[in-house]
Amino acid sequence: MSIPVLICDDSSFARKQVKRALPPGWEVSVEFAGNGEEGLAAIREGKGEVVFLDLTMPVMDGYQVLETIKAEDLPSVVIVISGDIQPEAVSRVKKMGALEFIKKPVDQAQLTKVLSDFGLYAE
Amino acid sequence: MSDYQLDDELRDALREVTNVAMGRAADLLARLLDTYVVLPIPVVNLLERSELNMALSSLRSVSSVSAVCQGFVGSRISGEALLIFNDTSFADIAELTSYSGDVTPEIELELLMDIANILIGACLKGLAEQLDLTFSQGQPVLLGQHVNIEDLVRNSSSGWQRALTVEIPYRLEGHSVDCDLLLLFTEDSINVLENKIHYLME
Image (cartoon, each protein chain N blue to C red):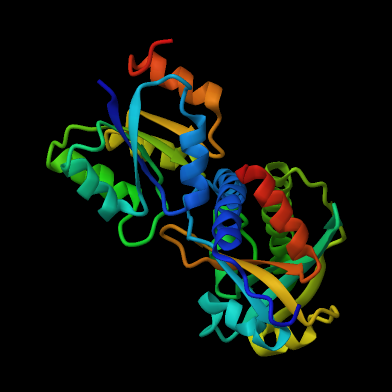
């Protein structure tokens, strides 16, 4: 059974970077979304059990996605991957229910560690 | 080269690496001023010199600005960084830095130079690291204090005709501080940037 993983970022460059940083051999089916609205639509279709979420996006940003996931109790665990590394941004997203914050550009070793720490991936 | 169009892949990738670089710069500024810096989506454009004022969209309606310019060169890329402040920002910045005296033009200049050093330095360093480039920076130069945008654009005297521009409008949450960091890359730099980005995408 592969895990439905959603990569939500407005930049295709960033989406590719995240996809490439996923641990090799992790059994997942990857879906992409270009903004928060598309991301939520995919989550509601069950395509985002694990969500890698950017914060700064047009149409609907990452904060709004986190709010909606919480308000509607959607079945997703969210890992925020953002260039906004201000302490305020990190604490805000954690308060809003994000599992973890990873700074951009994403690094495979760190991403793998976060996934194993939370039991989402085992080597 | 004059009919060169910016391709979407380059625009997207530049926006993304700039996003990461400006995030680091904003983090330093946020720690210095103990406030939250609202991060925008950077705007990437290919502009004629005569269109430069269009790149400064967030400051278009502002009557009085002050600005610093700093050149950079390295790895076959050259360009300049412009940091432009709405003059109404300085009272708030002085307050945030706990400066208690009169905000004279001399103090404004000092604040402008300090923040330019932080933002431009961190932003260029972030770009260079991600794209595996090495930049050396020139001395920051005051372009004008309490001038309007049109005069400022006219005064910036470097010789380029067309440039790749990246505009980053910073705002401080809960304060009336507006500034625009504008990175200009010469036309000759575009190919080099493109190659670097293709390499990263492989």
